[in-house]
Each structure stands twice: as structure tokens, then as C-alpha cells.
Image 1 (cartoon, rainbow, N blue to C red):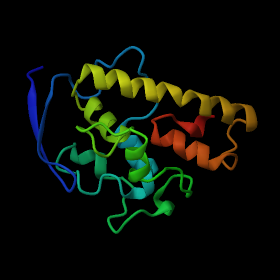
Image 2 (image 1 turned 180 degrees about the horizontal axis):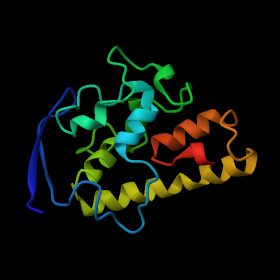
Image 3 (image 1 turned 45 degrees about the vertical axis):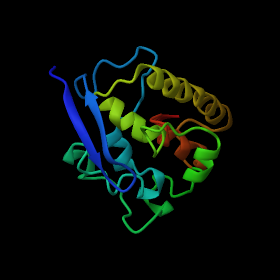
Image 4 (image 1 turned 90 degrees about the vertical axis):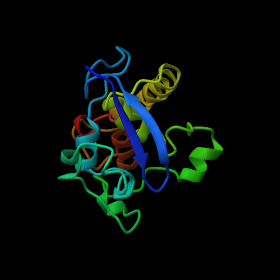
Length: 169
């Protein structure tokens, strides 16, 4: 694949550039095996529909065809489980979870990683964070009957935010 330079211009980044060096959706770290693609996550409903409303130029148009979006602001009814399941960006910043190149957090990193950007140190850090979510998978499996989507809905929604398909638990 020939490297592709992307110039970002949205409400949180202007003039940020990065290079896609891998084909879309391919050549992931063997430690990173998400259940859902960014397109699938957006269609299911994540982050109150607000997360990517101004990023459509950066990613493939087909990601947004069935995306559950809320341009007017966070709307929990846009989430698959209809519940709030995330903390505010200010909390993420205070906890040191935000990397300067991805001011929106993990999902922005994932969208860019999926699209072919590779930043070895940051990829390693974010994959480690993703792997830590498996404890929530174990908690849902322990507490809920398989397929009971009414059990632990906030935890299930949070797992969707991290590309774990909690509908299968």
C-alpha cells in the first residue's frame, strides 16, 4: 500500500496530519482483536451520537450512512442500550487518558488505527487500555444470562464503546 497523508480539519483539530501506512481494517497487532468495526459501532449507537458529527471528511462516507448521530448534542437515546455509559471529556483529560494526537480519546484512536495509521507507542498504550475492558466482559458474563440485554445495560453500552460486542454476552 502506498502511504496516504490525511489532513484533519474539524472542531477539535485543524491542520493535524497523519499518514495511513496500512490498508483499511488490516494488519492489526495480534493482541488487538476488536469485535466491531468503527462503522458497526456508529450504526449500533455509541457516545450519545455526538462523537463523530464533525469528522465525516476524515473517514469513509459509508461509515455514516446508518450511523446513529446527534448533531445537536449528546443524546443517550442514540446509544444502543439507551443509557449513558461514559464520562465527560474533561474527566478523560484529568485522568491522563487523552493523547495529544487524538483529542477525542480511544475511539478516535481506533478509527485512525482501523484506517491505517500506526503510532507504535500510542498503539501499544491504547491496545493495553482496550484489553483492560475484558474485566467488564467477565462481569457481565458472571451476572447476566446469555442474551439478556436488559442486564447490566450501562456496562454493556460501555463495552460497545470499546468495540466489544456486548450483544453476544
